[in-house]
Picture 1 (spheres, rainbow, N blue to C red):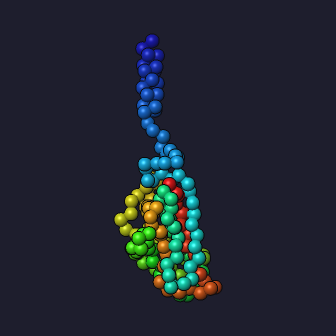
Picture 2 (picture 1 turned 120 degrees about the vertical axis):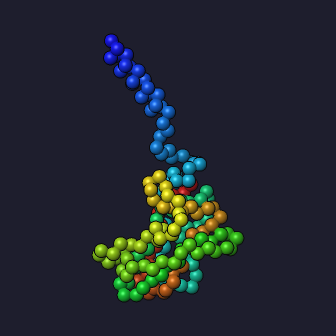
Picture 3 (picture 1 turned 90 degrees about the vertical axis):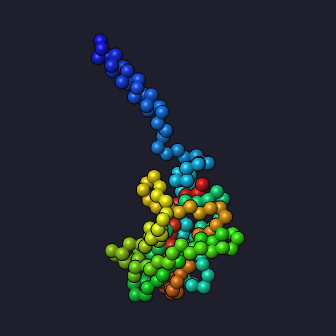
Length: 164
């Protein structure tokens, strides 16, 4: 008899604890948690010129969370440098870093694409234990090529993340 009562109480207590725990991730149109992805998206750019920065993510309506910025180049001979910039609509430009790409990154067997985001220090960590960057609605994330590439070997930049 006491065994049944103890079992019923245990099940009741577990049910109450289960009901009190919020779901791990909730996808909603508006979220106060900046690490919850609402609309997954991929941004892609091909860059050849060193003259002006190329917009990778342009003023997202509610902001964007960027989880990776991968860069690759087919050229296995020349060295390429990429600058990651954040530009406000007011015209203020902030350089987040300049990074040297490995030769043939992303196109040569055994050479992975270069993840620019992991090279930027001080970024917050999301619930998946990955660094991320928030791009506010009044900013543009830009990439500037530090050394010119050729038409045959453009630099390919792919960013992944989500829109809020």
